[in-house]
Length: 113
Image (cartoon, rainbow, N blue to C red; front, side):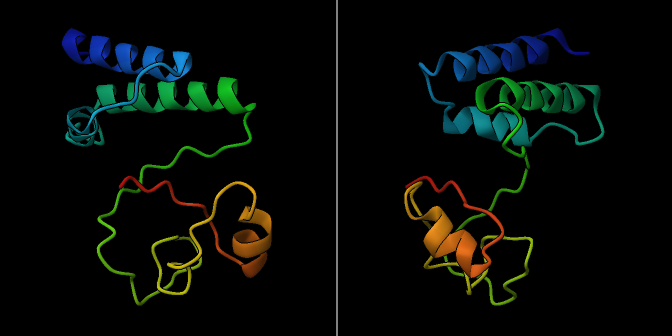
């Protein structure tokens, strides 16, 4: 495994565990540029699952879907929150069960302005 990438992943893990720093756009681009079949990508996934296990007691799912949310997708697939049917239902924690989950939206997307 590339040691520079391992250090980068470990530093990102520490940021997430401390809740002190957000990942930057460059960090995300670097993660997205990893070969999905590589040892480094497998390591990134294992660290992400560890964060989910510790931070939210395994009540969250780590997925790797990224999208550019410039317009709703007409497909509205049941497994994807970027669909037109779900687009206006981006919810905060208080309204998630009532407005989103109750309406059948599969996930609550995290969107960055």
